[in-house]
Amino acid sequence: MTNQVRVRFAPSPTGYLHVGGARTALFDWLYARKTGGVFILRIEDTDTERSSDEMTTGILESMTWLGLTWDEGPFLQSDGVDRHRATAERLVESGHAYRCFCPAEAIEQKRQEAAARKTDFKYDRTCLRLGPEEVRGRLANGEKAVIRFKVPQGAVTFKDAVIGDITIAGETIEDFVLVRSNTQPTYHLSVVSDDIEMRITHVIRGADHVNNTPKQILLYQALGATLPVFAHVPLILGPDKTRMSKRHGATSVQSYAEQGIIPEAFRNFLALMGWSPGNDQELFDTEELIRCFSLEGISRTNAVFNPEKLAWFNLQYIQKLPDEKLIAYVKPEFEKAGLWKDEFQTEKYAWFCSMLALLRPRAKTLLEFPRQARMFIIDAVEFDPAAVEKSMNDPSIRRNLAALGQRLEALPDFTHDAVEATIRGLATELGIKPGALMSGARVALTGQSVSPGLIETMLVFGREKTISRLLHIGPQ
Image 1 (cartoon, rainbow, N blue to C red):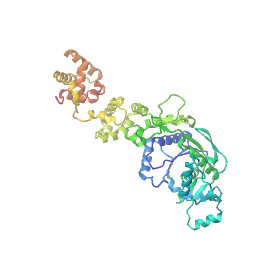
Image 2 (cartoon, rainbow, N blue to C red):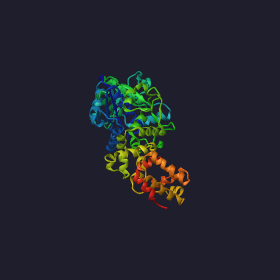
Image 3 (tube, helix red, strand yellow):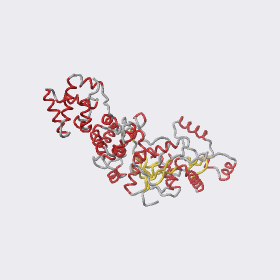
Image 4 (cartoon, helix red, strand yellow):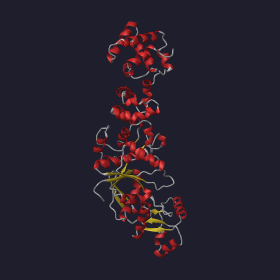
Protein backbone atom coordinates (compact mmCIF):
# COMPACT_ATOMS: atom_id res chain seq x y z
CA MET A 1 0.00 0.00 0.00
CA THR A 2 1.04 3.59 -0.54
CA ASN A 3 0.61 6.48 1.86
CA GLN A 4 -0.92 8.54 -0.96
CA VAL A 5 -4.69 8.28 -1.25
CA ARG A 6 -5.72 6.38 -4.37
CA VAL A 7 -9.43 6.14 -5.19
CA ARG A 8 -11.23 4.78 -8.21
CA PHE A 9 -14.57 5.23 -9.89
CA ALA A 10 -15.51 2.05 -11.72
CA PRO A 11 -18.72 2.36 -13.76
CA SER A 12 -20.11 -0.40 -15.93
CA PRO A 13 -20.73 0.64 -19.57
CA THR A 14 -24.09 -1.11 -19.69
CA GLY A 15 -25.88 2.24 -19.53
CA TYR A 16 -25.24 5.96 -19.39
CA LEU A 17 -23.81 7.58 -16.27
CA HIS A 18 -26.75 8.00 -13.92
CA VAL A 19 -27.25 10.40 -11.04
CA GLY A 20 -26.20 7.95 -8.33
CA GLY A 21 -23.03 6.99 -10.17
CA ALA A 22 -22.18 10.63 -10.81
CA ARG A 23 -22.56 11.45 -7.12
CA THR A 24 -20.24 8.54 -6.21
CA ALA A 25 -17.70 9.73 -8.80
CA LEU A 26 -17.93 13.25 -7.36
CA PHE A 27 -17.25 12.02 -3.80
CA ASP A 28 -14.26 10.00 -5.04
CA TRP A 29 -12.96 13.00 -6.98
CA LEU A 30 -13.45 15.43 -4.08
CA TYR A 31 -11.67 13.12 -1.65
CA ALA A 32 -8.73 12.69 -4.01
CA ARG A 33 -8.45 16.43 -4.54
CA LYS A 34 -8.85 17.18 -0.81
CA THR A 35 -6.05 14.78 0.18
CA GLY A 36 -3.73 15.39 -2.76
CA GLY A 37 -4.48 11.86 -3.91
CA VAL A 38 -5.04 10.12 -7.23
CA PHE A 39 -8.42 9.71 -8.92
CA ILE A 40 -8.56 6.67 -11.20
CA LEU A 41 -11.22 5.87 -13.78
CA ARG A 42 -11.77 2.17 -14.51
CA ILE A 43 -14.43 0.96 -16.92
CA GLU A 44 -15.77 -2.40 -15.73
CA ASP A 45 -16.65 -3.82 -19.12
CA THR A 46 -16.47 -7.56 -18.43
CA ASP A 47 -20.22 -7.96 -19.03
CA THR A 48 -19.54 -8.33 -22.73
CA GLU A 49 -23.16 -8.92 -23.74
CA ARG A 50 -24.44 -5.66 -22.23
CA SER A 51 -21.38 -3.39 -22.44
CA SER A 52 -20.89 -1.11 -25.42
CA ASP A 53 -18.41 1.44 -26.73
CA GLU A 54 -21.28 3.93 -27.03
CA MET A 55 -21.97 3.73 -23.31
CA THR A 56 -18.28 4.03 -22.50
CA THR A 57 -18.08 7.19 -24.61
CA GLY A 58 -21.20 8.52 -22.89
CA ILE A 59 -19.69 7.94 -19.45
CA LEU A 60 -16.48 9.73 -20.40
CA GLU A 61 -18.40 12.67 -21.87
CA SER A 62 -20.59 12.97 -18.77
CA MET A 63 -17.56 12.88 -16.48
CA THR A 64 -15.88 15.56 -18.57
CA TRP A 65 -19.04 17.71 -18.54
CA LEU A 66 -19.13 17.49 -14.74
CA GLY A 67 -15.49 18.54 -14.55
CA LEU A 68 -14.40 15.28 -12.88
CA THR A 69 -11.01 14.94 -14.51
CA TRP A 70 -9.20 11.67 -13.81
CA ASP A 71 -5.50 11.28 -13.09
CA GLU A 72 -5.09 7.73 -14.35
CA GLY A 73 -7.09 5.78 -16.91
CA PRO A 74 -9.55 5.18 -18.26
CA PHE A 75 -8.57 1.54 -17.80
CA LEU A 76 -10.67 -1.33 -19.14
CA GLN A 77 -11.31 -4.13 -16.69
CA SER A 78 -11.37 -6.59 -19.61
CA ASP A 79 -7.67 -5.94 -20.16
CA GLY A 80 -6.94 -7.62 -16.83
CA VAL A 81 -8.83 -10.89 -17.38
CA ASP A 82 -5.65 -12.99 -17.57
CA ARG A 83 -4.48 -11.51 -14.29
CA HIS A 84 -7.89 -12.21 -12.72
CA ARG A 85 -7.66 -15.85 -13.74
CA ALA A 86 -4.10 -16.10 -12.42
CA THR A 87 -5.31 -14.65 -9.10
CA ALA A 88 -7.93 -17.40 -8.89
CA GLU A 89 -5.30 -20.06 -9.57
CA ARG A 90 -3.16 -18.67 -6.75
CA LEU A 91 -6.12 -19.05 -4.41
CA VAL A 92 -6.62 -22.67 -5.52
CA GLU A 93 -2.93 -23.42 -4.94
CA SER A 94 -3.01 -21.85 -1.48
CA GLY A 95 -6.11 -23.83 -0.48
CA HIS A 96 -8.40 -20.79 -0.33
CA ALA A 97 -10.41 -21.90 -3.38
CA TYR A 98 -11.37 -25.14 -5.11
CA ARG A 99 -12.82 -26.42 -8.36
CA CYS A 100 -16.50 -27.31 -8.44
CA PHE A 101 -17.91 -29.63 -11.12
CA CYS A 102 -21.54 -29.56 -9.90
CA PRO A 103 -23.86 -28.70 -12.83
CA ALA A 104 -25.47 -25.30 -12.54
CA GLU A 105 -28.87 -26.92 -13.17
CA ALA A 106 -28.48 -29.23 -10.17
CA ILE A 107 -27.48 -26.37 -7.89
CA GLU A 108 -30.40 -24.27 -9.11
CA GLN A 109 -32.79 -27.14 -8.38
CA LYS A 110 -31.47 -27.41 -4.83
CA ARG A 111 -31.83 -23.66 -4.47
CA GLN A 112 -35.48 -23.84 -5.54
CA GLU A 113 -36.15 -26.74 -3.20
CA ALA A 114 -34.72 -24.74 -0.32
CA ALA A 115 -36.90 -21.78 -1.29
CA ALA A 116 -39.96 -24.05 -1.30
CA ARG A 117 -39.03 -25.15 2.24
CA LYS A 118 -38.49 -21.48 3.12
CA THR A 119 -34.92 -22.18 4.18
CA ASP A 120 -31.69 -20.49 3.14
CA PHE A 121 -29.61 -22.29 0.54
CA LYS A 122 -25.84 -22.66 0.63
CA TYR A 123 -23.73 -24.78 -1.63
CA ASP A 124 -22.98 -27.99 0.31
CA ARG A 125 -19.29 -28.18 -0.67
CA THR A 126 -19.71 -31.48 -2.48
CA CYS A 127 -16.65 -30.82 -4.64
CA LEU A 128 -14.48 -29.66 -1.75
CA ARG A 129 -14.16 -33.32 -0.81
CA LEU A 130 -12.65 -34.27 -4.17
CA GLY A 131 -9.02 -35.32 -4.08
CA PRO A 132 -6.34 -33.69 -6.26
CA GLU A 133 -6.04 -36.74 -8.54
CA GLU A 134 -9.78 -36.84 -9.21
CA VAL A 135 -9.85 -33.13 -9.95
CA ARG A 136 -6.97 -33.44 -12.42
CA GLY A 137 -8.59 -36.44 -14.05
CA ARG A 138 -11.94 -34.78 -14.52
CA LEU A 139 -10.31 -31.69 -15.97
CA ALA A 140 -8.26 -33.90 -18.31
CA ASN A 141 -11.50 -35.53 -19.47
CA GLY A 142 -12.80 -32.10 -20.50
CA GLU A 143 -15.27 -31.59 -17.65
CA LYS A 144 -16.19 -27.97 -17.01
CA ALA A 145 -15.65 -26.57 -13.55
CA VAL A 146 -16.06 -23.29 -11.73
CA ILE A 147 -13.62 -22.05 -9.12
CA ARG A 148 -15.24 -21.40 -5.76
CA PHE A 149 -13.80 -19.48 -2.84
CA LYS A 150 -13.63 -21.50 0.38
CA VAL A 151 -15.26 -19.23 2.97
CA PRO A 152 -13.47 -19.66 6.31
CA GLN A 153 -15.24 -19.99 9.64
CA GLY A 154 -15.81 -16.93 11.77
CA ALA A 155 -17.38 -13.53 11.36
CA VAL A 156 -16.22 -10.83 8.95
CA THR A 157 -15.90 -7.49 10.72
CA PHE A 158 -14.88 -4.16 9.27
CA LYS A 159 -15.24 -0.47 10.06
CA ASP A 160 -16.98 1.45 7.32
CA ALA A 161 -15.94 5.13 7.16
CA VAL A 162 -19.60 6.15 6.76
CA ILE A 163 -21.76 3.44 8.32
CA GLY A 164 -19.47 2.43 11.18
CA ASP A 165 -18.77 -1.09 12.49
CA ILE A 166 -20.27 -3.92 10.43
CA THR A 167 -20.17 -7.62 11.28
CA ILE A 168 -21.36 -10.42 9.01
CA ALA A 169 -21.57 -14.00 10.26
CA GLY A 170 -19.35 -16.25 8.18
CA GLU A 171 -21.92 -19.03 8.06
CA THR A 172 -24.25 -16.77 6.07
CA ILE A 173 -21.73 -16.49 3.21
CA GLU A 174 -21.83 -19.18 0.56
CA ASP A 175 -18.67 -20.45 -1.13
CA PHE A 176 -18.98 -17.95 -3.96
CA VAL A 177 -17.82 -18.44 -7.52
CA LEU A 178 -14.61 -16.72 -8.62
CA VAL A 179 -14.34 -18.06 -12.17
CA ARG A 180 -17.28 -19.40 -14.17
CA SER A 181 -17.18 -22.65 -16.12
CA ASN A 182 -16.56 -20.62 -19.31
CA THR A 183 -13.39 -19.25 -17.61
CA GLN A 184 -14.96 -15.78 -17.21
CA PRO A 185 -13.95 -14.18 -13.87
CA THR A 186 -16.79 -12.90 -11.67
CA TYR A 187 -17.24 -9.40 -10.32
CA HIS A 188 -15.82 -10.11 -6.85
CA LEU A 189 -12.60 -11.58 -8.16
CA SER A 190 -12.08 -8.94 -10.86
CA VAL A 191 -12.72 -5.94 -8.64
CA VAL A 192 -10.43 -7.13 -5.84
CA SER A 193 -7.68 -8.12 -8.26
CA ASP A 194 -7.91 -4.72 -9.96
CA ASP A 195 -8.03 -2.74 -6.72
CA ILE A 196 -4.94 -4.54 -5.43
CA GLU A 197 -3.13 -4.02 -8.74
CA MET A 198 -4.04 -0.30 -8.76
CA ARG A 199 -3.07 0.10 -5.08
CA ILE A 200 -6.47 1.50 -4.16
CA THR A 201 -6.47 2.85 -0.60
CA HIS A 202 -10.11 3.92 -0.28
CA VAL A 203 -13.16 2.27 -1.86
CA ILE A 204 -15.89 4.91 -1.92
CA ARG A 205 -19.06 3.53 -3.48
CA GLY A 206 -22.84 3.22 -3.12
CA ALA A 207 -24.45 1.58 -0.11
CA ASP A 208 -25.88 -1.09 -2.41
CA HIS A 209 -22.37 -2.61 -2.37
CA VAL A 210 -22.28 -3.17 1.40
CA ASN A 211 -23.30 -6.82 1.01
CA ASN A 212 -20.44 -7.38 -1.44
CA THR A 213 -17.82 -6.13 0.99
CA PRO A 214 -17.47 -9.20 3.29
CA LYS A 215 -16.69 -11.46 0.33
CA GLN A 216 -14.16 -8.98 -0.99
CA ILE A 217 -12.53 -8.62 2.43
CA LEU A 218 -12.11 -12.39 2.55
CA LEU A 219 -10.38 -12.26 -0.84
CA TYR A 220 -8.02 -9.51 0.33
CA GLN A 221 -7.12 -11.56 3.39
CA ALA A 222 -6.61 -14.77 1.41
CA LEU A 223 -4.31 -12.91 -1.00
CA GLY A 224 -2.33 -11.36 1.85
CA ALA A 225 -3.20 -7.84 0.71
CA THR A 226 -3.81 -4.79 2.89
CA LEU A 227 -7.47 -3.86 3.17
CA PRO A 228 -8.55 -0.50 1.76
CA VAL A 229 -10.81 1.82 3.71
CA PHE A 230 -14.42 1.17 2.73
CA ALA A 231 -16.90 4.05 2.63
CA HIS A 232 -20.42 3.26 1.47
CA VAL A 233 -22.42 6.36 0.60
CA PRO A 234 -26.22 6.55 0.90
CA LEU A 235 -28.50 5.82 -2.00
CA ILE A 236 -30.39 8.50 -3.91
CA LEU A 237 -34.16 8.19 -3.77
CA GLY A 238 -36.81 9.81 -5.91
CA PRO A 239 -39.18 12.45 -4.47
CA ASP A 240 -41.54 9.62 -3.41
CA LYS A 241 -38.72 8.08 -1.30
CA THR A 242 -38.36 5.03 -3.57
CA ARG A 243 -35.19 4.06 -5.44
CA MET A 244 -34.39 6.60 -8.15
CA SER A 245 -35.60 5.31 -11.51
CA LYS A 246 -36.86 6.45 -14.91
CA ARG A 247 -40.36 6.94 -13.54
CA HIS A 248 -39.00 9.92 -11.60
CA GLY A 249 -37.89 11.59 -14.82
CA ALA A 250 -34.35 11.99 -16.07
CA THR A 251 -31.77 9.79 -14.33
CA SER A 252 -28.75 10.11 -16.64
CA VAL A 253 -26.26 12.95 -16.33
CA GLN A 254 -26.38 13.47 -20.09
CA SER A 255 -30.10 14.26 -19.96
CA TYR A 256 -29.52 17.10 -17.48
CA ALA A 257 -26.85 18.57 -19.72
CA GLU A 258 -29.38 18.46 -22.57
CA GLN A 259 -31.94 20.24 -20.38
CA GLY A 260 -29.68 23.26 -19.99
CA ILE A 261 -28.34 22.59 -16.51
CA ILE A 262 -24.99 24.21 -15.76
CA PRO A 263 -22.36 21.62 -14.75
CA GLU A 264 -21.17 23.62 -11.73
CA ALA A 265 -24.76 23.84 -10.49
CA PHE A 266 -25.32 20.11 -10.97
CA ARG A 267 -22.05 19.33 -9.18
CA ASN A 268 -22.96 21.58 -6.24
CA PHE A 269 -26.43 20.00 -6.08
CA LEU A 270 -25.01 16.46 -6.19
CA ALA A 271 -22.48 17.16 -3.45
CA LEU A 272 -25.22 18.10 -0.99
CA MET A 273 -27.17 14.90 -1.64
CA GLY A 274 -25.77 12.76 1.13
CA TRP A 275 -23.02 15.09 2.34
CA SER A 276 -23.08 18.12 4.61
CA PRO A 277 -20.38 20.70 5.33
CA GLY A 278 -21.62 20.93 8.91
CA ASN A 279 -23.33 24.29 8.47
CA ASP A 280 -26.13 25.85 6.43
CA GLN A 281 -23.99 26.85 3.43
CA GLU A 282 -25.44 25.67 0.14
CA LEU A 283 -23.53 27.42 -2.64
CA PHE A 284 -19.92 26.30 -3.09
CA ASP A 285 -17.41 27.01 -5.79
CA THR A 286 -15.10 24.15 -6.73
CA GLU A 287 -12.28 25.10 -4.38
CA GLU A 288 -14.70 25.47 -1.46
CA LEU A 289 -16.18 22.03 -2.12
CA ILE A 290 -12.74 20.46 -2.15
CA ARG A 291 -11.67 22.27 1.01
CA CYS A 292 -14.83 21.41 2.97
CA PHE A 293 -15.34 17.82 1.83
CA SER A 294 -14.72 14.93 4.22
CA LEU A 295 -15.85 11.33 4.55
CA GLU A 296 -17.07 12.19 8.05
CA GLY A 297 -19.58 14.62 6.52
CA ILE A 298 -21.30 11.89 4.51
CA SER A 299 -24.72 10.99 5.89
CA ARG A 300 -25.84 7.47 6.76
CA THR A 301 -29.39 8.18 5.57
CA ASN A 302 -30.52 8.05 1.97
CA ALA A 303 -30.70 11.28 -0.01
CA VAL A 304 -33.81 12.49 -1.85
CA PHE A 305 -33.54 13.95 -5.34
CA ASN A 306 -35.43 17.25 -5.46
CA PRO A 307 -35.90 18.64 -9.02
CA GLU A 308 -37.07 22.00 -7.66
CA LYS A 309 -33.87 22.34 -5.65
CA LEU A 310 -31.79 21.56 -8.73
CA ALA A 311 -33.67 24.28 -10.63
CA TRP A 312 -32.89 26.70 -7.78
CA PHE A 313 -29.20 25.84 -7.90
CA ASN A 314 -29.16 26.33 -11.67
CA LEU A 315 -30.81 29.73 -11.36
CA GLN A 316 -28.26 30.83 -8.74
CA TYR A 317 -25.36 29.84 -10.93
CA ILE A 318 -26.86 31.53 -13.99
CA GLN A 319 -27.01 34.77 -12.01
CA LYS A 320 -23.39 34.69 -10.86
CA LEU A 321 -21.49 33.17 -13.80
CA PRO A 322 -18.95 35.55 -15.38
CA ASP A 323 -20.02 36.76 -18.83
CA GLU A 324 -17.35 34.79 -20.68
CA LYS A 325 -18.30 31.54 -18.94
CA LEU A 326 -22.01 32.08 -19.56
CA ILE A 327 -21.39 32.87 -23.22
CA ALA A 328 -19.40 29.64 -23.57
CA TYR A 329 -22.39 27.72 -22.16
CA VAL A 330 -25.13 29.45 -24.17
CA LYS A 331 -23.27 29.56 -27.50
CA PRO A 332 -24.19 25.94 -28.44
CA GLU A 333 -27.84 26.66 -27.63
CA PHE A 334 -27.83 29.79 -29.81
CA GLU A 335 -26.23 27.78 -32.59
CA LYS A 336 -28.93 25.10 -32.37
CA ALA A 337 -31.56 27.84 -32.60
CA GLY A 338 -29.85 29.40 -35.63
CA LEU A 339 -29.28 32.66 -33.74
CA TRP A 340 -25.54 32.68 -33.15
CA LYS A 341 -23.32 35.31 -34.75
CA ASP A 342 -19.56 35.39 -34.35
CA GLU A 343 -19.73 39.13 -33.75
CA PHE A 344 -21.27 38.37 -30.34
CA GLN A 345 -17.72 37.56 -29.23
CA THR A 346 -16.07 40.46 -31.06
CA GLU A 347 -17.50 43.89 -31.94
CA LYS A 348 -20.93 43.16 -30.41
CA TYR A 349 -19.57 41.50 -27.27
CA ALA A 350 -20.60 44.34 -24.93
CA TRP A 351 -24.09 44.41 -26.44
CA PHE A 352 -24.45 40.63 -26.14
CA CYS A 353 -23.40 40.77 -22.49
CA SER A 354 -25.96 43.52 -21.80
CA MET A 355 -28.67 41.39 -23.38
CA LEU A 356 -27.68 38.35 -21.31
CA ALA A 357 -27.74 40.52 -18.17
CA LEU A 358 -31.34 41.47 -19.00
CA LEU A 359 -32.32 37.84 -19.55
CA ARG A 360 -30.48 36.21 -16.63
CA PRO A 361 -33.17 36.80 -13.96
CA ARG A 362 -35.79 35.14 -16.17
CA ALA A 363 -33.73 32.15 -17.35
CA LYS A 364 -33.89 28.99 -15.25
CA THR A 365 -31.92 26.93 -17.80
CA LEU A 366 -29.50 27.62 -20.61
CA LEU A 367 -32.20 26.62 -23.10
CA GLU A 368 -34.26 29.68 -22.21
CA PHE A 369 -31.63 32.20 -23.32
CA PRO A 370 -32.07 31.77 -27.10
CA ARG A 371 -35.85 31.65 -26.70
CA GLN A 372 -35.88 34.99 -24.91
CA ALA A 373 -33.09 36.50 -27.00
CA ARG A 374 -34.78 35.79 -30.32
CA MET A 375 -36.68 39.08 -30.33
CA PHE A 376 -33.41 41.03 -29.98
CA ILE A 377 -31.59 39.21 -32.77
CA ILE A 378 -34.06 38.72 -35.62
CA ASP A 379 -35.12 41.69 -37.74
CA ALA A 380 -38.89 41.15 -37.88
CA VAL A 381 -41.19 41.29 -34.88
CA GLU A 382 -43.05 38.03 -34.25
CA PHE A 383 -46.41 39.15 -32.88
CA ASP A 384 -48.53 37.13 -30.48
CA PRO A 385 -52.14 37.64 -31.72
CA ALA A 386 -53.45 37.61 -28.14
CA ALA A 387 -51.01 40.36 -27.15
CA VAL A 388 -52.02 42.47 -30.16
CA GLU A 389 -55.69 42.00 -29.32
CA LYS A 390 -55.15 42.97 -25.71
CA SER A 391 -52.93 46.04 -26.05
CA MET A 392 -53.32 47.32 -29.61
CA ASN A 393 -57.04 47.21 -30.29
CA ASP A 394 -57.55 50.95 -29.58
CA PRO A 395 -56.95 52.85 -32.88
CA SER A 396 -55.28 55.67 -30.98
CA ILE A 397 -52.49 53.48 -29.60
CA ARG A 398 -50.62 53.44 -32.89
CA ARG A 399 -50.70 57.22 -33.08
CA ASN A 400 -49.52 57.45 -29.49
CA LEU A 401 -46.67 55.01 -30.10
CA ALA A 402 -45.63 56.94 -33.22
CA ALA A 403 -45.56 60.08 -31.09
CA LEU A 404 -43.43 58.26 -28.52
CA GLY A 405 -41.01 57.21 -31.24
CA GLN A 406 -40.65 60.81 -32.38
CA ARG A 407 -40.04 62.04 -28.81
CA LEU A 408 -37.37 59.36 -28.25
CA GLU A 409 -35.73 60.28 -31.56
CA ALA A 410 -35.35 63.85 -30.35
CA LEU A 411 -33.70 62.89 -27.04
CA PRO A 412 -30.11 64.11 -26.66
CA ASP A 413 -29.21 61.01 -24.64
CA PHE A 414 -30.91 57.63 -24.85
CA THR A 415 -30.64 56.76 -21.15
CA HIS A 416 -32.91 54.98 -18.71
CA ASP A 417 -33.96 58.15 -16.88
CA ALA A 418 -34.49 60.10 -20.09
CA VAL A 419 -36.61 57.36 -21.68
CA GLU A 420 -38.71 56.90 -18.56
CA ALA A 421 -39.32 60.66 -18.25
CA THR A 422 -40.33 60.83 -21.91
CA ILE A 423 -42.88 58.01 -21.56
CA ARG A 424 -44.43 59.48 -18.44
CA GLY A 425 -44.46 63.00 -19.85
CA LEU A 426 -46.16 61.91 -23.08
CA ALA A 427 -48.74 59.87 -21.15
CA THR A 428 -49.61 62.95 -19.09
CA GLU A 429 -50.02 65.07 -22.22
CA LEU A 430 -52.25 62.41 -23.81
CA GLY A 431 -54.31 62.03 -20.67
CA ILE A 432 -53.69 58.29 -20.40
CA LYS A 433 -52.00 56.13 -17.81
CA PRO A 434 -48.28 55.45 -18.40
CA GLY A 435 -49.03 51.73 -18.12
CA ALA A 436 -51.31 51.82 -21.18
CA LEU A 437 -48.61 53.48 -23.27
CA MET A 438 -45.97 51.06 -21.99
CA SER A 439 -48.14 47.99 -22.69
CA GLY A 440 -48.58 49.05 -26.29
CA ALA A 441 -44.88 49.85 -26.63
CA ARG A 442 -43.95 46.42 -25.25
CA VAL A 443 -46.05 44.65 -27.88
CA ALA A 444 -44.75 46.90 -30.65
CA LEU A 445 -41.16 46.16 -29.69
CA THR A 446 -41.26 42.49 -28.67
CA GLY A 447 -44.54 41.15 -30.09
CA GLN A 448 -45.38 39.87 -26.61
CA SER A 449 -47.41 41.14 -23.67
CA VAL A 450 -44.81 39.89 -21.20
CA SER A 451 -41.11 40.72 -21.38
CA PRO A 452 -38.27 42.01 -19.22
CA GLY A 453 -38.61 45.62 -18.04
CA LEU A 454 -39.70 47.81 -20.96
CA ILE A 455 -37.11 50.54 -20.57
CA GLU A 456 -34.30 48.01 -20.05
CA THR A 457 -35.55 46.21 -23.16
CA MET A 458 -35.48 49.48 -25.14
CA LEU A 459 -31.89 50.10 -24.07
CA VAL A 460 -30.83 46.65 -25.27
CA PHE A 461 -32.67 47.17 -28.57
CA GLY A 462 -30.93 50.50 -28.88
CA ARG A 463 -32.32 53.84 -30.01
CA GLU A 464 -32.49 53.06 -33.72
CA LYS A 465 -34.33 49.74 -33.51
CA THR A 466 -36.64 51.00 -30.74
CA ILE A 467 -37.73 54.03 -32.75
CA SER A 468 -38.09 52.01 -35.96
CA ARG A 469 -40.43 49.52 -34.30
CA LEU A 470 -42.53 52.23 -32.69
CA LEU A 471 -42.92 54.12 -35.96
CA HIS A 472 -43.51 51.06 -38.13
CA ILE A 473 -45.77 48.79 -36.12
CA GLY A 474 -46.66 45.41 -37.62
CA PRO A 475 -50.12 43.86 -38.13
CA GLN A 476 -53.32 45.72 -37.45
